[in-house]
Amino acid sequence: MSTSLLPPPQLSVVTDNRNESPHDDTDVIAEIKRLKKERGATILAHYYQEGEIQELADVTGDSLKLARAATQVDSPVIAFCGVHFMAETAKMLNPSKKVLLPDLQAGCSLSDSCPADKLWRYQEMLRENGRKFQTVTYINSSAAVKALSDWIVTSGNAEQIVRKVPEEYEILFVPDQHLGRYLSEVTGRKMILWPGSCMVHEIFSVQDLIAMKKKFPQGKAIAHPECPQNILEHSDFIGGTEAMIRYVGGYAEPTDFIVATEANMLWQLASKHPRHRYHPVPGITCACNKCPHMARNTLEKLRDCLRDLTPEITWQPEFDKAKEVLERSLLRD
Ligand code: 13P
Ligand code: SF4
Image 1: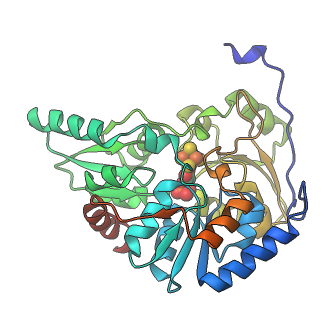
Image 2: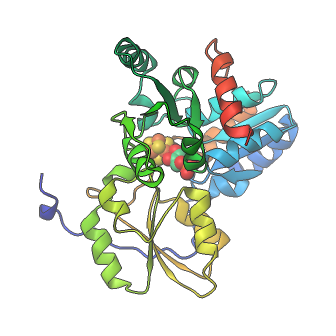
Protein backbone atom coordinates (compact mmCIF):
# COMPACT_ATOMS: atom_id res chain seq x y z
CA MET A 1 0.00 0.00 0.00
CA SER A 2 1.34 3.42 -0.93
CA THR A 3 1.73 5.73 2.05
CA SER A 4 0.73 8.72 -0.07
CA LEU A 5 -2.84 7.36 -0.16
CA LEU A 6 -3.17 7.79 3.60
CA PRO A 7 -4.49 11.04 5.12
CA PRO A 8 -1.70 13.03 6.80
CA PRO A 9 -1.49 12.18 10.52
CA GLN A 10 -2.21 14.89 13.08
CA LEU A 11 0.97 16.41 14.43
CA SER A 12 0.59 16.93 18.13
CA VAL A 13 2.74 19.15 20.29
CA VAL A 14 3.46 17.51 23.60
CA THR A 15 4.33 19.78 26.46
CA ASP A 16 3.48 18.65 29.96
CA ASN A 17 0.60 16.21 30.28
CA ARG A 18 1.65 14.67 33.57
CA ASN A 19 -1.59 15.54 35.34
CA GLU A 20 -3.94 14.41 32.60
CA SER A 21 -5.68 11.13 33.22
CA PRO A 22 -8.63 9.68 31.30
CA HIS A 23 -10.10 8.22 34.51
CA ASP A 24 -9.55 8.57 38.21
CA ASP A 25 -6.77 6.22 39.31
CA THR A 26 -6.47 7.60 42.84
CA ASP A 27 -7.55 4.37 44.55
CA VAL A 28 -5.35 2.02 42.56
CA ILE A 29 -2.35 4.34 42.99
CA ALA A 30 -2.92 4.41 46.77
CA GLU A 31 -3.14 0.59 46.78
CA ILE A 32 0.11 0.29 44.82
CA LYS A 33 1.89 2.56 47.29
CA ARG A 34 0.55 0.59 50.25
CA LEU A 35 1.37 -2.84 48.73
CA LYS A 36 4.81 -1.68 47.66
CA LYS A 37 5.62 -0.87 51.28
CA GLU A 38 4.03 -4.05 52.65
CA ARG A 39 5.87 -6.29 50.18
CA GLY A 40 9.20 -4.48 50.42
CA ALA A 41 9.16 -3.91 46.68
CA THR A 42 11.28 -1.69 44.49
CA ILE A 43 9.58 -0.57 41.28
CA LEU A 44 11.82 -0.26 38.21
CA ALA A 45 10.17 1.27 35.14
CA HIS A 46 11.38 1.72 31.58
CA TYR A 47 10.95 5.13 29.92
CA TYR A 48 8.49 3.53 27.48
CA GLN A 49 5.92 2.89 30.20
CA GLU A 50 2.96 5.26 30.57
CA GLY A 51 3.78 8.36 32.64
CA GLU A 52 1.46 7.25 35.46
CA ILE A 53 3.59 4.12 35.94
CA GLN A 54 6.90 6.00 35.65
CA GLU A 55 5.66 8.37 38.35
CA LEU A 56 5.30 5.46 40.81
CA ALA A 57 8.73 3.99 40.12
CA ASP A 58 11.75 4.14 42.41
CA VAL A 59 13.97 4.14 39.33
CA THR A 60 13.13 5.00 35.72
CA GLY A 61 15.63 4.40 32.98
CA ASP A 62 16.66 2.84 29.71
CA SER A 63 17.67 -0.81 29.47
CA LEU A 64 21.24 -0.21 30.65
CA LYS A 65 20.36 2.01 33.60
CA LEU A 66 17.65 -0.40 34.76
CA ALA A 67 19.90 -3.45 34.44
CA ARG A 68 22.53 -1.73 36.57
CA ALA A 69 19.90 -0.45 39.01
CA ALA A 70 18.63 -4.02 39.48
CA THR A 71 22.01 -5.04 40.89
CA GLN A 72 21.68 -2.35 43.59
CA VAL A 73 18.21 -3.33 44.84
CA ASP A 74 18.31 -4.56 48.43
CA SER A 75 14.55 -4.98 49.01
CA PRO A 76 13.22 -8.56 48.63
CA VAL A 77 10.98 -7.85 45.62
CA ILE A 78 11.54 -6.12 42.28
CA ALA A 79 8.39 -5.16 40.35
CA PHE A 80 9.69 -4.62 36.83
CA CYS A 81 7.56 -2.39 34.63
CA GLY A 82 9.01 -3.11 31.23
CA VAL A 83 9.10 -6.12 28.91
CA HIS A 84 10.03 -9.75 29.50
CA PHE A 85 13.71 -9.62 28.49
CA MET A 86 14.26 -6.69 30.89
CA ALA A 87 12.72 -8.52 33.83
CA GLU A 88 14.76 -11.63 32.96
CA THR A 89 17.89 -9.46 32.96
CA ALA A 90 17.02 -8.07 36.40
CA LYS A 91 16.57 -11.62 37.72
CA MET A 92 19.89 -12.77 36.27
CA LEU A 93 21.74 -9.80 37.74
CA ASN A 94 20.14 -10.09 41.17
CA PRO A 95 19.05 -13.75 41.52
CA SER A 96 18.06 -13.70 45.19
CA LYS A 97 15.22 -11.24 44.50
CA LYS A 98 11.68 -12.13 43.59
CA VAL A 99 11.26 -10.42 40.22
CA LEU A 100 7.68 -9.67 39.18
CA LEU A 101 6.49 -8.63 35.73
CA PRO A 102 2.93 -7.20 35.80
CA ASP A 103 2.06 -8.92 32.49
CA LEU A 104 4.08 -12.00 31.59
CA GLN A 105 3.00 -11.60 27.94
CA ALA A 106 4.82 -8.25 27.62
CA GLY A 107 7.25 -9.35 24.91
CA CYS A 108 9.29 -7.62 22.21
CA SER A 109 9.24 -7.93 18.42
CA LEU A 110 13.02 -7.71 18.28
CA SER A 111 13.49 -10.47 20.79
CA ASP A 112 10.92 -12.64 18.97
CA SER A 113 12.75 -12.20 15.65
CA CYS A 114 15.72 -14.21 16.91
CA PRO A 115 14.79 -17.62 18.35
CA ALA A 116 17.75 -19.34 20.06
CA ASP A 117 17.58 -22.54 17.97
CA LYS A 118 17.70 -20.54 14.73
CA LEU A 119 20.65 -18.48 15.99
CA TRP A 120 22.50 -21.63 17.06
CA ARG A 121 22.02 -23.21 13.60
CA TYR A 122 23.28 -20.05 11.91
CA GLN A 123 26.35 -19.92 14.18
CA GLU A 124 27.03 -23.60 13.41
CA MET A 125 26.84 -22.88 9.69
CA LEU A 126 29.36 -20.03 10.07
CA ARG A 127 31.70 -22.26 12.12
CA GLU A 128 31.46 -25.09 9.57
CA ASN A 129 32.48 -22.56 6.92
CA GLY A 130 35.58 -21.65 8.91
CA ARG A 131 34.40 -18.16 9.83
CA LYS A 132 35.99 -16.70 12.96
CA PHE A 133 33.40 -14.49 14.61
CA GLN A 134 32.04 -13.15 17.86
CA THR A 135 28.33 -12.73 18.47
CA VAL A 136 27.32 -9.31 19.73
CA THR A 137 23.73 -9.35 20.94
CA TYR A 138 21.39 -6.48 21.66
CA ILE A 139 19.90 -6.83 25.12
CA ASN A 140 16.45 -7.05 23.47
CA SER A 141 16.76 -10.83 23.27
CA SER A 142 15.86 -13.91 25.28
CA ALA A 143 18.16 -15.36 27.94
CA ALA A 144 18.69 -18.40 25.66
CA VAL A 145 20.03 -16.10 22.93
CA LYS A 146 22.19 -14.23 25.43
CA ALA A 147 23.66 -17.57 26.47
CA LEU A 148 24.83 -18.11 22.85
CA SER A 149 26.52 -14.70 22.75
CA ASP A 150 29.98 -13.28 23.44
CA TRP A 151 28.74 -9.79 24.29
CA ILE A 152 25.48 -8.10 25.24
CA VAL A 153 24.97 -4.47 24.28
CA THR A 154 22.31 -1.87 24.94
CA SER A 155 21.70 1.33 23.02
CA GLY A 156 23.72 2.99 25.82
CA ASN A 157 26.98 1.00 25.55
CA ALA A 158 26.88 -0.62 22.11
CA GLU A 159 29.53 1.48 20.43
CA GLN A 160 31.96 1.01 23.33
CA ILE A 161 31.51 -2.79 23.29
CA VAL A 162 31.76 -3.15 19.52
CA ARG A 163 35.09 -1.29 19.64
CA LYS A 164 36.32 -3.89 22.17
CA VAL A 165 35.82 -6.87 19.85
CA PRO A 166 39.29 -7.87 18.60
CA GLU A 167 39.81 -7.01 14.91
CA GLU A 168 40.59 -10.62 13.96
CA TYR A 169 36.94 -11.56 14.56
CA GLU A 170 33.99 -10.86 12.30
CA ILE A 171 30.96 -9.58 14.19
CA LEU A 172 27.62 -11.36 14.01
CA PHE A 173 25.23 -8.70 15.31
CA VAL A 174 21.77 -9.86 16.45
CA PRO A 175 18.85 -9.20 16.40
CA ASP A 176 18.46 -5.53 15.35
CA GLN A 177 19.59 -4.92 11.76
CA HIS A 178 19.14 -1.14 12.04
CA LEU A 179 21.17 -0.71 15.21
CA GLY A 180 23.80 -3.07 13.75
CA ARG A 181 24.01 -1.11 10.49
CA TYR A 182 24.36 2.16 12.42
CA LEU A 183 27.09 0.70 14.66
CA SER A 184 28.92 -0.67 11.66
CA GLU A 185 28.86 2.82 10.13
CA VAL A 186 30.17 4.62 13.26
CA THR A 187 32.81 2.05 14.20
CA GLY A 188 33.86 1.00 10.70
CA ARG A 189 33.48 -2.68 11.72
CA LYS A 190 32.01 -5.04 9.13
CA MET A 191 29.05 -6.99 10.50
CA ILE A 192 26.82 -9.88 9.61
CA LEU A 193 23.38 -8.50 10.47
CA TRP A 194 20.45 -10.56 11.73
CA PRO A 195 17.30 -9.36 9.95
CA GLY A 196 15.31 -8.32 13.06
CA SER A 197 13.74 -4.96 13.83
CA CYS A 198 11.63 -3.12 16.38
CA MET A 199 8.02 -2.79 15.25
CA VAL A 200 7.81 0.67 16.86
CA HIS A 201 10.99 2.29 15.57
CA GLU A 202 10.60 0.83 12.10
CA ILE A 203 7.38 2.58 11.16
CA PHE A 204 8.26 6.27 11.35
CA SER A 205 7.32 8.19 8.26
CA VAL A 206 10.30 9.91 6.65
CA GLN A 207 7.95 12.21 4.68
CA ASP A 208 6.45 13.43 7.95
CA LEU A 209 9.87 13.86 9.51
CA ILE A 210 10.95 16.04 6.57
CA ALA A 211 7.67 18.02 6.77
CA MET A 212 8.21 18.59 10.51
CA LYS A 213 11.75 19.81 9.94
CA LYS A 214 10.34 22.37 7.49
CA LYS A 215 7.70 23.38 10.01
CA PHE A 216 10.31 23.86 12.77
CA PRO A 217 13.40 25.04 10.88
CA GLN A 218 15.25 25.91 14.10
CA GLY A 219 14.22 22.58 15.68
CA LYS A 220 16.41 19.54 16.23
CA ALA A 221 15.43 16.04 15.11
CA ILE A 222 16.50 13.27 17.51
CA ALA A 223 16.24 9.57 16.74
CA HIS A 224 16.87 6.22 18.42
CA PRO A 225 19.38 4.01 16.56
CA GLU A 226 16.72 1.28 16.27
CA CYS A 227 15.23 3.48 13.50
CA PRO A 228 16.02 2.65 9.87
CA GLN A 229 18.71 4.51 7.95
CA ASN A 230 16.28 6.84 6.12
CA ILE A 231 15.16 8.30 9.49
CA LEU A 232 18.67 8.48 10.94
CA GLU A 233 20.05 10.34 7.95
CA HIS A 234 17.52 13.14 8.51
CA SER A 235 18.27 13.40 12.24
CA ASP A 236 20.50 15.91 14.00
CA PHE A 237 21.19 13.55 16.88
CA ILE A 238 21.17 9.76 17.13
CA GLY A 239 21.28 8.13 20.52
CA GLY A 240 19.70 5.77 23.02
CA THR A 241 17.15 7.08 25.47
CA GLU A 242 19.57 8.25 28.19
CA ALA A 243 21.73 9.95 25.56
CA MET A 244 18.64 11.74 24.19
CA ILE A 245 17.81 13.12 27.63
CA ARG A 246 21.39 14.37 28.02
CA TYR A 247 21.36 15.93 24.55
CA VAL A 248 18.11 17.80 25.13
CA GLY A 249 19.38 18.93 28.55
CA GLY A 250 22.34 20.57 26.82
CA TYR A 251 20.05 23.17 25.19
CA ALA A 252 19.61 26.07 27.62
CA GLU A 253 17.03 27.95 25.52
CA PRO A 254 13.53 26.55 24.82
CA THR A 255 13.86 24.48 21.64
CA ASP A 256 11.59 22.42 19.38
CA PHE A 257 12.64 18.78 19.38
CA ILE A 258 11.28 16.43 16.74
CA VAL A 259 11.41 13.02 18.36
CA ALA A 260 11.69 9.67 16.54
CA THR A 261 11.29 7.12 19.30
CA GLU A 262 8.60 5.47 21.40
CA ALA A 263 5.98 8.07 22.30
CA ASN A 264 6.12 7.65 26.09
CA MET A 265 9.68 8.99 25.98
CA LEU A 266 8.14 12.40 25.48
CA TRP A 267 6.70 12.21 28.98
CA GLN A 268 10.19 11.63 30.42
CA LEU A 269 11.74 14.37 28.26
CA ALA A 270 9.03 16.85 29.27
CA SER A 271 9.37 15.80 32.88
CA LYS A 272 13.16 16.31 32.98
CA HIS A 273 13.39 19.32 30.63
CA PRO A 274 10.00 21.08 30.56
CA ARG A 275 11.36 24.27 28.96
CA HIS A 276 11.43 22.61 25.52
CA ARG A 277 8.66 21.66 23.10
CA TYR A 278 8.55 18.04 21.91
CA HIS A 279 6.92 16.85 18.69
CA PRO A 280 6.56 13.11 18.06
CA VAL A 281 7.26 11.88 14.53
CA PRO A 282 4.16 9.92 13.53
CA GLY A 283 4.24 6.45 12.07
CA ILE A 284 3.25 5.58 8.53
CA THR A 285 0.04 3.94 9.67
CA CYS A 286 -0.60 5.43 13.09
CA ALA A 287 0.16 8.66 14.88
CA CYS A 288 1.04 7.32 18.32
CA ASN A 289 4.13 5.05 18.11
CA LYS A 290 3.56 3.45 21.48
CA CYS A 291 4.98 0.00 22.08
CA PRO A 292 2.04 -2.42 22.41
CA HIS A 293 4.16 -4.80 24.50
CA MET A 294 5.09 -2.17 27.06
CA ALA A 295 1.45 -1.07 27.11
CA ARG A 296 0.38 -4.48 28.46
CA ASN A 297 1.57 -3.33 31.89
CA THR A 298 -1.17 -1.24 33.48
CA LEU A 299 -1.66 0.28 36.93
CA GLU A 300 -4.18 -2.46 37.73
CA LYS A 301 -1.75 -5.24 36.74
CA LEU A 302 1.01 -3.60 38.76
CA ARG A 303 -1.28 -3.53 41.79
CA ASP A 304 -2.31 -7.16 41.25
CA CYS A 305 1.26 -8.43 40.91
CA LEU A 306 2.27 -6.69 44.14
CA ARG A 307 -0.78 -8.13 45.89
CA ASP A 308 -0.41 -11.71 44.55
CA LEU A 309 3.41 -11.78 44.14
CA THR A 310 2.93 -13.22 40.67
CA PRO A 311 3.65 -13.39 37.69
CA GLU A 312 7.23 -14.07 38.65
CA ILE A 313 10.38 -14.58 36.57
CA THR A 314 11.84 -17.86 37.78
CA TRP A 315 15.38 -19.12 37.26
CA GLN A 316 15.87 -21.06 34.00
CA PRO A 317 18.86 -23.32 33.14
CA GLU A 318 20.10 -20.92 30.41
CA PHE A 319 20.30 -18.07 32.93
CA ASP A 320 23.66 -19.34 34.29
CA LYS A 321 25.56 -18.77 31.04
CA ALA A 322 23.56 -15.66 30.07
CA LYS A 323 24.31 -14.09 33.47
CA GLU A 324 28.06 -14.43 32.86
CA VAL A 325 27.82 -12.67 29.49
CA LEU A 326 25.59 -9.94 30.93
CA GLU A 327 27.93 -9.24 33.83
CA ARG A 328 31.00 -9.13 31.62
CA SER A 329 29.27 -6.77 29.18
CA LEU A 330 27.27 -4.43 31.39
CA LEU A 331 28.96 -4.32 34.76
CA ARG A 332 32.66 -4.18 33.87
CA ASP A 333 34.50 -1.50 31.92
P1 13P B 1 16.93 1.49 25.32
O1 13P B 1 16.21 1.21 26.56
O2 13P B 1 18.31 0.92 25.35
O3 13P B 1 16.94 2.90 24.89
O4 13P B 1 16.21 0.68 24.14
C1 13P B 1 15.01 1.09 23.66
C2 13P B 1 14.04 -0.02 23.52
O5 13P B 1 13.50 -0.24 22.49
C3 13P B 1 13.76 -0.81 24.68
O6 13P B 1 12.94 -1.84 24.34
FE1 SF4 C 1 10.76 -4.28 21.70
FE2 SF4 C 1 10.52 -2.11 20.19
FE3 SF4 C 1 8.82 -2.49 22.19
FE4 SF4 C 1 11.40 -1.89 22.69
S1 SF4 C 1 9.90 -0.59 21.70
S2 SF4 C 1 10.15 -3.48 23.69
S3 SF4 C 1 12.42 -2.95 20.98
S4 SF4 C 1 9.02 -3.80 20.35
